[in-house]
Length: 236
Image 1 (cartoon, rainbow, N blue to C red):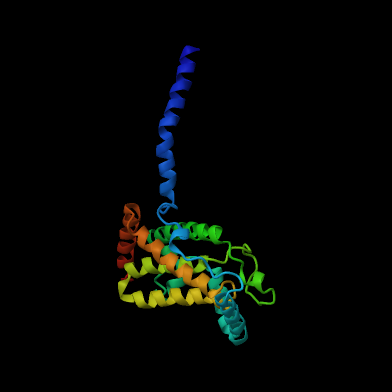
Image 2: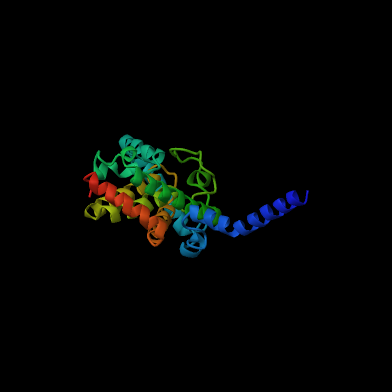
């Protein structure tokens, strides 16, 4: 009996000792915590409801709805449904196939997880209504998103965080990569899923995510593995 109690006590002490380390390990799973990047500290508040800027942004969406072509709308819808680094395949060519580039895929899955957590923190902080909440008459691509999650644009955060990392991996194509990120962000305007300042905030947050990830040793190791893989594949 004494031996059994002693074993339980030792097991409990081991769990207590492992607690901080386990917590630290969990923090490391998401390479940027709120302490690393808090959107509330790096992004301005979105335009207040009814302000001149808010009215101008709504007017822009209405104008785009009138001017957008069927092809532009279809391309914007496709972008909205694509949430991984394959959005840059048109820039890098068919060899940029993530199913055949495991190290590169792992790198960008980490970027995706990290930037999404950062963007979600921003959405929870600012609670900006989506465009179709402000104007139900808008013909948006989808209304399946959380109504109070407009700022910052998560899709744009993804495009610019991934774009900024990819531009470092393939610097010869950096301008085209970043132009593609901008086009992807613009698709959120074409689809009327976001206001202009949502997209601008997503761009800024995405660039910050990339910059701060590059300072993390674990991410740097993944980056080096992806760079070697892309070099072997003839993509650098």
